[in-house]
Amino acid sequence: MTKRAYRYRFYPTPEQEQLLAQTFGCVRFVYNHILRWRTDEYYKNGKKVNYNAASKQLTELKSNPEYQWLNDVSSVPIQQSLRHQQKAFKNFWEGRANYPNFKKRHANQRASFVSSAFSYKDGKLFIAKSKEPLNIRWSRGLSSEPSSITIIKDRAGRYFVSILCEFEAKPMPISNKTVGIDLGLNDLFITSDGEKSGNPRHTKRYEIKLAYLQRQLAKKQKGSNNRAKARLKVARVHAKIADCRMDATHQASRKLINENQVVCVESLNVKGMIKNPKLAKHIADANWGEFVRQLKYKAGWAGRDLVKIDRFFPSSKRCSGCGFVHERLPLSIREWECPECKTHHDRDVNAAKNIKTAGLAGLACGATGTGIEA
Image 1 (spheres, rainbow, N blue to C red):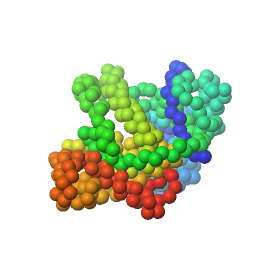
Image 2 (image 1 turned 90 degrees about the vertical axis):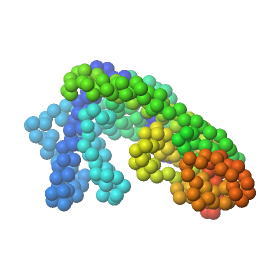
Image 3 (image 1 turned 90 degrees about the horizontal axis):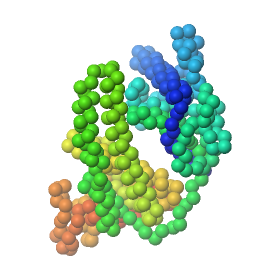
Image 4 (image 1 turned 45 degrees about the vertical axis):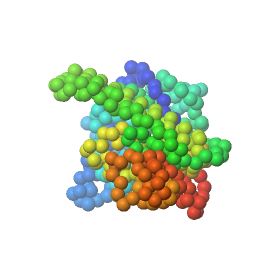
């Protein structure tokens, strides 16, 4: 059994919307207040504050008459925000992440509820302090009783609930097909079979509209209602782009996992590549990191193998026929002929074939199990 989150959109009543606004505000305030206190302790006194000390600080904060309004909402999401903060600090101390950031009012708002602060009965979900169920658009059923939920309000003003459930993955029938994938910009991915996915360029589709709305936003007076309305319009366009991109990524990753027993893909340093100012927007729009992440967890669920190739493997410069390796092959050269065996290569298809060969070789040399990275 594993954990799986099911995400649904819901439409709160005016009373629920007010309650959630208060909850988001309290969660954000407590998170930022404790973060400021922990930061002062860390940088001024060199002390690493643990979760118990932070929880004690929260108790003192709620007992202060000046902050009695913190008791108007459920205490669970406030307490959960400290657990999330503790995890962020642990990742920072162990070198996996940067120092935790302060929560912003106009960013995505989140509130997490454990089983003591919500109930799920007869297909209806209730949260603490609210007598009416959430008006959820159930697009699919749950795999088990929820263990925790997270309510999200994005920058476009939409409400979502993410429900965490126990999930038992069922391996798919074994397939005889294997594939290698080369990631690119003109085509988001190219397979070793010669299939090219194309690139819908979702950001470019809405580029003119987005630029116009951003100019309108820049002209509005800060703090005014008109600026808030203009900000919401910009956020909705960004949400549309993100939804289109995510939908295309899910469809592509699902198709590859369904059809192939082994998927070989190159490991790219996306964070490093995105620092290139000329290509940053296009690399971000390609969604490479999310694409590989989806391949990984979907392979694990389906009983497939995902093999990652070292990023320094010369997949583009190596001839997939005889193994000849060019010393230098500029990106401007999209097709080339091998000087040894005279085979004519499409640069990307040739790279995908080499990735597949290297991946299968690595898999045969000791990689066992399913959903692995070789």
